[in-house]
Structure formats: structure tokens, C-alpha cells
Image (cartoon, rainbow, N blue to C red):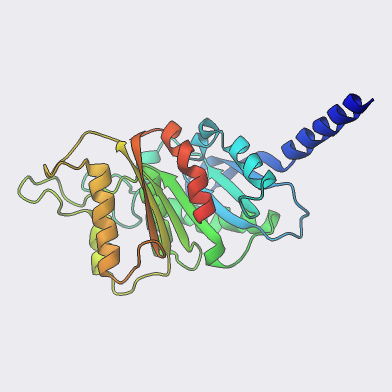
Length: 277
């Protein structure tokens, strides 16, 4: 009888634990992008009156590969993550055009639809989230993040819209995005994000979380012994520091030893970002 009661309690605990997370997928028509956008929503199973933090991920299709659902279930069950709704926006076929820096395509014209993607996020996605989910209105409670080129897009979106997103997560960000072709005599010149952070008149109130893996790539364009994925991130953080930002408080960096450019590595650190944010 004791064993039967024990197993009933254990089963009830497992069911309760699993119910702590609700996952829904939606196909959202976008007039700005001219296509339907798949959106996955991961929400803790809490009463509708509970206020939730908001995290939007570019390349949301990769979240499933990271077993984010199980990671969130465990974090919520163990009270290691405050109530947060995670929204994963799937990339479309025109990813190289929609992700980038709004208003500033790279030297090959890539990212020419980044402005339209920004409008989708601000004018279509966010109002929809606010209509159906009880999320905080404070930018300090809202983050946008992404992987690789999606990380570049996340940095740019938060930088340009600090009243909407007060936190940006950049996983192996494509910070090499440049306005002019590579020049061997000035290998680190013309990096779009670095340039506008350096020259900006006002620093937006955004906190930044960066990560890079030591095996993210093999390229080392300036031949300093540091791969570009890490070097570009370190250089950007140095500029942030020059502009008055404090490491650890305003920005954070996680370097993953042996980390590669894929969802397997990003999945190992995604909870680090969510908890920090």
C-alpha cells in the first residue's frame, strides 16, 4: 500500500512538472514581410494575471534542436527562472535579406529587408504578443536574441529600439557584417555594428549578453591568433567599454571552450542567457 501511494505521488509530481510549460505554434501573416511567419510560444503554465518577462528569439526554428522545452520545464519547476514567455520567430527563405542591420545593408546588398523585419517585430509581433500574453511593458523586462546572423539582427533591433528591448542576446553573432569589401591593409575596418556603436551620439540603455565558441570558425582575417567570431566580439565589447559601459553589469561575455557554430553549442548556454537576462 505504501509503494502504491509512493508511485501515485511520483506520477503526480511528474505530470505536474510537465504541465509547467505550455507550447503553442502560430502562423502569422505579415504585411511588412509579405509572407506568413511561423511563431513558437513557450509559456509557463501560470494564471493569466501573472506578469511575464518577454524574450524574442530570431531563428526560433533552432530552439527545438536545443531541447529548450525540457530546459524551460526544469528551470520553472526548480524556480531557477522567473516567469518568462519565450517567443521563437522562424526564419524565412529570405533570411540573408531579413536579418542584418536595418537601413544599412552590407557591401553585397544583403540585409536589404532588415528594415521590414524590424517593422514586423515592432508593429505586428509585439502588439500580437501584448494582446494575448500578459507581458511587462518595461524594456528592462524584455529581451531579443538570436544566433549567428540572427544575433547580429538582435543586437541591431535592441540598439535601434531601446524603448522596446532593454536586453540583447548575441550567440556567435555575425559581427563581421561590413559596409565595404575586405581590405588586407585594414582587416578590421568597415564593420557596420562596430562603427555605429563607436560613432553614436547617444548610448541606448541596453544590456548585452555575448557568447562565442573557440571552434566557432577558423578564419582569422587580421592574423592575430584569435578567430574572427571571438575577435569581433571582444572588439565590440572594448568599444562599449570605451563608451562608458561596465563589463558584468552592462554587458557579459561567455566563451565556450570547444564550442561550435551550431544549435548544440548554443543550447548548452541558452539558459545562462535567459537567467542572466
